[in-house]
Image (tube, rainbow, N blue to C red):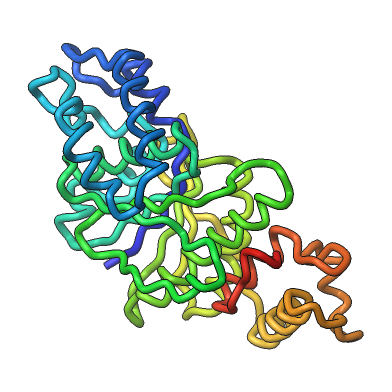
Length: 302
């Protein structure tokens, strides 16, 4: 079995409005997406645990056959995220039938949440097998006890996914925490497959490098990254660099020293020039790497 980690962008919004992969008798329409955006604005102000139930109750009927849409009938080409899954499995329906786990990363914006929930609905072939979580934000919430269940598509909202440095540090640390929790919950021989076809471009850049760090802590072949070009006919596995055990240990030590406000040891100065620290603070790369390595990362201090 495999855990599929999928960053979500706005590809499905564009696909629905452009009728990409649509049945011939279906029209999605801007009015429907605007209704979903209104739902997302309210849902983001509520409790993360209530999002999936609210989606089923309020939006589920808008996406069903009675409304003439039936999102389950759309071809995978409707979005980059669904199309990549379709190229990795013989049928998208196998994602949940074979008890794989799918974790979708959503930016914490109205359009980001709406798009990720639409992707989840397509992958889950309906609104019933969808869950929603949010990355814990504060130091007191560092113990992440929520699980990513098998046979369910889980949407995880990550706050701060924009170009401002302070917020980006927080969001990249959040991405790192998701990677770490996915790895902690994976069985000894369970594969983790990170898809980098869709999603916010800055997030994909950071996610790729953090995937290399994670892959270096697990047995070879258990962590992979895959990409599907928009005109491609097959998904491509991206070769990942593998760090030595010694390098990972030194990386952990250097990032922990900076995060804790201690002077960087002279023999670890190389990590400062590697773009992982800036002055006495971690860069987004540094914060993300530290989270992937399973260390406590304070959202106040980074």
